[in-house]
Image (tube, rainbow, N blue to C red):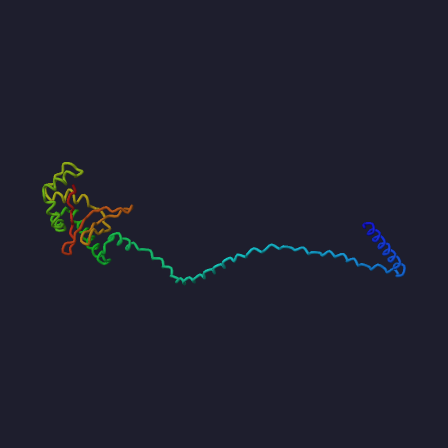
Length: 231
């Protein structure tokens, strides 16, 4: 069985081969179809992608504050320069020295100075003649009472530069104390202690005051005042 199949198969194959050879001879050989090879793909140039850095976010700076508009300066009023004070006269300077800080009118000062210098001039004649009775009329009552007391006279006696002189009465004080201290002394100006109490002085070249008299105004009249002793 197997053999028969083999033979049959071989016969069929031979027949097929013969048929194929006969066909080959009869039919012209056809050129083999050209198979177009696919064209090589062009290399696609991929452009380089340039990655630009992202810009940093802009920080908005605050707008500068507008400069303050300066206010216009007020116009300065031109003050006229004070005129220089005229130089003071000798009389003005003496008046200022005499009254100091007290409110003594100029005419009062002139009247008082005139009256006091007149009394001093009259006393110069009284002292030259040692006219005690006339001298007493120029002295105020309080001074006469004080210097008439023996105890006060003894205190004054102990202070005299000349030892041995005795002061027993006011007349002795007039002769040995009052007159020698003032004879031929020049008095040029007055100084107010109060409106009714004044010193009569001599001004030295060093502008120092030497006091020679004290005066009190009593009932409108200037009288000599002899200050009491100081302890």
